[in-house]
Length: 338
Ligand SMILES: NC(=O)c1ccc[n+]([C@@H]2O[C@H](COP(=O)([O-])OP(=O)(O)OC[C@H]3O[C@@H](n4cnc5c(N)ncnc54)[C@H](OP(=O)(O)O)[C@@H]3O)[C@@H](O)[C@H]2O)c1
Ligand SMILES: [Zn+2]
Image (tube, rainbow, N blue to C red; front, side, top):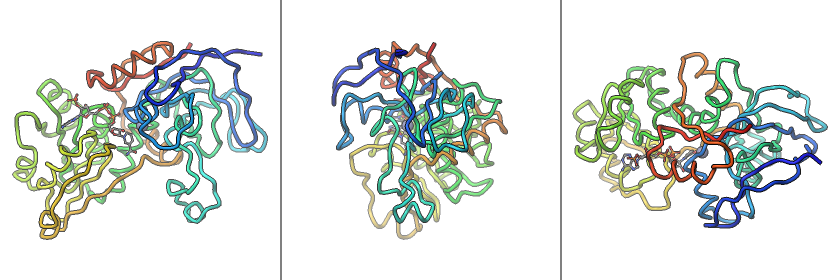
């Protein structure tokens, strides 16, 4: 039987382990993907460190998967061998529960997260459910496409549903994997874009990627500065730091919305007074479905948006993950396969 390399997390808080095993066979309604690239998302920490309840180990994580279909299971009619495809956070849904029947696949009661509940992309091959597969336009290489499958779709999809209109002041807080794509999407969607980061070293790049202003959260007061720019219609908060999000709420304008993407277990603190007078809201947003991924990928093909990446070979997944955690990566670490 043909063998493949994958990188397993052995248990909550355990190390990454490079293992060799049989290439899996597709089951009904799934396809097998020969993976070429997989982004390392900060959310992989939920599996690595065991923060997500009820997971089973060993587990191959990774939910920014890009590759080529190399085998198709029975019952799959919309996908074929040789197609360039990706899989994101959306690993599958049941299609039968009430949210699914309403078309709200992200609300599925039996939602499967790629690389959490089933094995993901830190491997040479993976099995993906057909409803979780997005096709990748030719304009993007598979390395470029991988980060769009989570960092890209999450910022694209949350921004397009945020209610902000062309010309509105939109701030993207956190200038990492999600943030550097969020700034590009906000700019190309026609928003008056502000990037909020820490330190000055990312300022020039934020401006180059489309921010009209860069605010340094370390030395300045971003909420005050947003207010002096007229108040933000939307703040897209990607930094996994609830205190930093709380500090931004006063920078929202009338009817402004804090869209929470950064996933921390700590509470966001806000007083009713901060919300009532200016009719401000706080909303969370989870990534999106495979269809949303296709929309994000096609938007990148149309507008020239691309992630900035650092690549590591699959076998060096542990170093790649540490690089992501260090905050030094510019800007998305991507694992590549032979
Ligand atoms: N909602 C969703 O569906 C969804 C999807 C994907 C990811 N996420 C979550 O989104 C978060 C970000 O993920 P990522 O992959 O983009 O992580 P990342 O690449 O590690 O980037 C996080 C960025 O936040 C910055 N940051 C941290 N604290 C900050 C602060 N106080 N002020 C300004 N910037 C700050 C960091 O900057 P420094 O370099 O200065 O440290 C870093 O650039 C994670 O919590 C992840 O789990 C959520
Ligand atoms: Zn992710």
